[in-house]
Image (cartoon, rainbow, N blue to C red):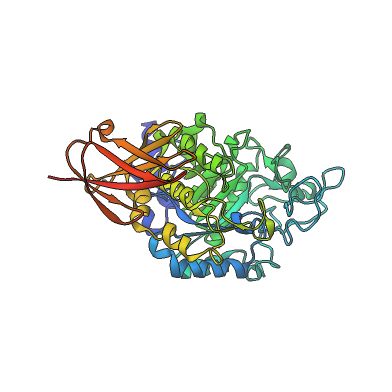
Length: 479
């Protein structure tokens, strides 16, 4: 009887927190817990969108963001790209605006005195909550926060996301600022020893302290008021794994009344925490910061293969952003301003792998200066994107030093998708032995990149690929 009471109470909480039409089926099959926190699902397919980091680092402003949203609405929305995400330090008037001798160009650390007290102030309300810089986001004035910008994104038929850093601002700690809903202050819940090792703006939060959950509740209450749809929470898994703060964020989301994607960074996510991640997060980074380097892409094969048992509805291992097109404007955040260092063949490989492994797809480039040819080929190919969004039984069949094979199923027809990869530093003919998957008899083959039918195959499927190249073949069984 006691268990039944707990279940009823949990389902009631779930009904309360899932308020939009797309989440009305939260009860029963959509709920994944009946004791602590109901995880109401937001992402039956891998999220697709754009994030500002790879192009703008920490300094995007309202004008630049709106221009990108306009471009997405006109060119990408119809192909499934729907999230527009502002990455970190939107609460800083001038991030990276001082010469930091210990960090890269434009790194957004704040200056500290010898006692660790901030010399640079961040934009923050009376409850220790960071708010948007009005200098960069003028529509946030008069306490409006990101609500006007979210309204703009929603008016375009897209969804709005922001990056947050784990923890509570150092500034709030030293000023002993209040926490909404608690008599505790920032100084009571901060862990001053628990700092992000690559960004010094915040202290960690001790989940065992009174006021800690109330702090996170107040944050997500504010984000719900702004009508945020997607939270990218950073410094969550980089050793150590911040189990307490992950759980507090999930509880705060379910309490706030607005469904939100919870995306955890940075990685590599610990595989030993897979069950915990599936319970509390929507997606999580399985890679370290991923850039336009072949070694990063080559490593992604092993990472995505390792996480195969753990991908599924609302639980998406994330291979990180897609660094195609124009990157690192003003030589930030990594390397010189450039068009991607990935060759066209390597771009084929990345999109083929990320799609057949069903990684979330988040474009990192500046869309406004990326060549149309890149956008048309990689971000508008609906046959390729359908593999990412709708296939099942996605897994690696074979990999050695020379080539790799991945496979998936089109659930409506039973057709098979085959990703064929040449990992060698030279062009090569790569052959898939169809017997490895018991694919016997005649199959009609279609190349999804060239959008051409290749005729009939039986027993073996062979393709000629360039250096670090790939293709995706759809196989349809013939009667």
